[in-house]
Length: 393
Image (cartoon, rainbow, N blue to C red; front, side):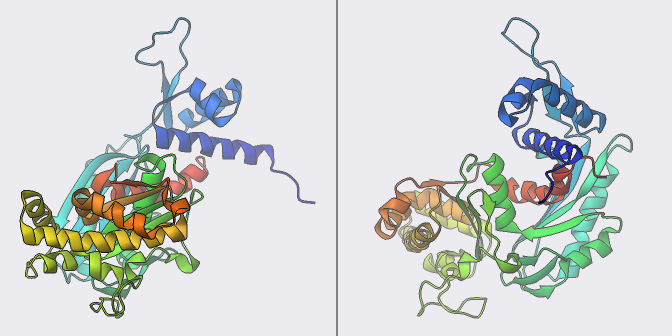
């Protein structure tokens, strides 16, 4: 018979649970922690004292209270002292941020990424961003926990190999190794898929907070999804799940960058929208926004383009709703802009395709964290080991 957890294991688990709660929810009173975590007041007091000594949280009286008697101390994450670096490799942009415990962005950098840029050329500006941000960090009393990287492609988490990122133009590229070589003393480096990490933070602290079954769709040239089922990410064998953009919806459609034909992203991605709008020579987010804005002004061809993409977007979402039965579907990236114009059409197509029992409760939303979702999500990759065991150095 297996022995139960030791007192030390229980203590470390409780420390992680408390720190994670404050990390996600922000400043929280001891009284609320006692209620939410199901622990007694003395245990909460001992745990917060230990986390305070470790420099991970601080405690202070609430700034305002309308209640008589001694107010409950408020526990806050030490966002300015405990931090991670977050990097995001996207189709048209390279972004970097220093993110404090609690998901607070302390510093950020961004540059354009010309399409066709190779791995080493992309890694160098990201490494320079980290060096610039590091120079601005106070030398004393801070704690760096690691670096997380979000990539718009299929990532092998164990070593940071990007197996396939057709919209970026990378196949079997050792991005993790290249970053380690450029960053030097990077410490713990973790890579993940852009849509996956965005889904995780929208689920924990964004538009899908309180929902345990969520689909986060991210679109630019391609389309990917982060899928949360019963509160856990659906990764699949190897961690490559969620490539919904390569779900074939039109076998007689256009050839996809992956080599197949009629993938969903060929009908709802950037190229499809611009082609329908007669703007094939353009590319990038600004071009997509141009079509959306033209449609809102009444331009007939732009409206036609939005309708076409909206039809296929609703078609694919309807199928995903039947398969995964989510509570919420979030439209991120350029799909957010299309959704805002074509929401009624998307909902109509979804209603026609999805089973009543699967769609009757569905909520269609845009990201609450906006474009910061990928950066905050990348930082979560770095914070995870700290939240699992706060006293593990």
